[in-house]
Image (cartoon, rainbow, N blue to C red):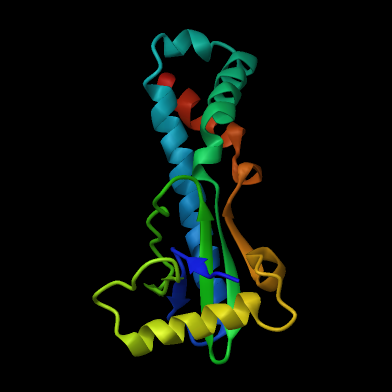
Length: 175
């Protein structure tokens, strides 16, 4: 089986408690960032005051925007404890994983369909292959990250609070 983990990471945390604490902090920060993005996006709407003349109209405006854009912000990691380290694969929309403020990790990707990057030694490249093969395609593994690690959801649609966004916009309009 081929191995292609383009965005793999090796976390710098030495224990699961510190890794979980970093993920919780990251989630709180990311959720706040997404909410602020929505507030800023709504404040740019023409004729904003009429769209928020009632709670119902304001909530409809927020939900319409949410339905069109929220999936752009979904982000999660599948985490693999292996030997004395933690490895992860991020899942996100687009080509670039959003900047993480609290998670501490090094890039640890591996792929076997092209040459290794010039800045990685042969020994390091072999170590990456060993790790990803062991956690994903070793004995009893099926190659599917979610079936072989545990997932931490940084943001999904259930983290979005439209009432929070409404409240921020309403206060701005009526100040």
